[in-house]
Image 1: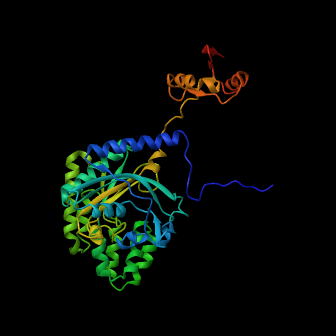
Image 2 (image 1 turned 135 degrees about the horizontal axis):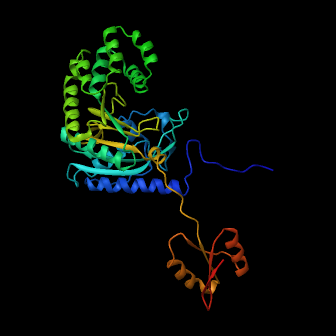
Image 3 (image 1 turned 180 degrees about the vertical axis):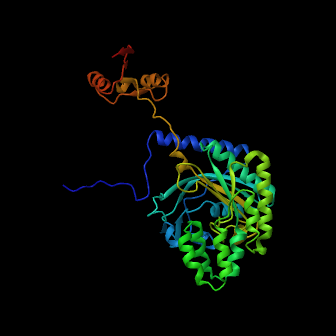
Length: 391
């Protein structure tokens, strides 16, 4: 006999009952928090033009995007990122909306690059974009909101690591690496694959700069790393280092010092981000659940340039940490005839949600048998003389 079972696609998953409640609870808390900070909700289509992500410089390889052909024959991509689509929306409505724009979203992204890492094909994200505002106060707003969001979403044990895109960029320029080589090095640093990085860097003629890149990856901690980074000889990044010092001091003064760390080897998506970059981690999850930073060049690729910054939180990863019990099973069954449907619905509306259900059975005997099989203790019979029967 043929087996016609069809499972979910690789990397996708089904969610039932408590898992749905856990995710919905996180989404509701995220929306309430973002609204309190003045961020309005925006939703973008699942399908976008493939060239949107290519033209805006999103650092994702083409093979990591789910693609299909649209009705006009052009290539579409299932949204692999929310920032570029929201930038498209903001650019299209720039004349009608006053800057700065504070926007938030809760929606899925789709990426195929997690096949051998256990990462899902579909990820639910909650995030914000602050468009049209530059400077330290904008970055501090985003970092403060990210910290509040992590705590509000059930991750009070979070830590956030700060870096700056200028550090690696300055060293890579001195190294003389091609764009492809820069991306290779960036990936190795992002993966913390120091063994492979050490094997790769000697191939470049500027050995002192290669050694500086290796040391950059080890600079992690608090105030002490500022003195260490000064020995790397990256004068082109002095402004970025000074900016990080100011950011770090302000966050420490605000009481977040125990949750914020410096990581000068944080270089994720270096060409996409232009300044401050950060990631957030929680115990029990083996990857970053928060990613963000400043991306001042993206809006210019779509039209008028505008400074921008934002972050995204992996809600699915945080859902795994939520403990939400399943709703209790029904304790009341309503038996009714077709003619008494209105009365049955009235009875249903007067009972606690989910604890009372309609019987699909045609006879009273069948409804009694169903109640007994499912451990239901009360049967309501809706007839000319509605009555309640204890079982």
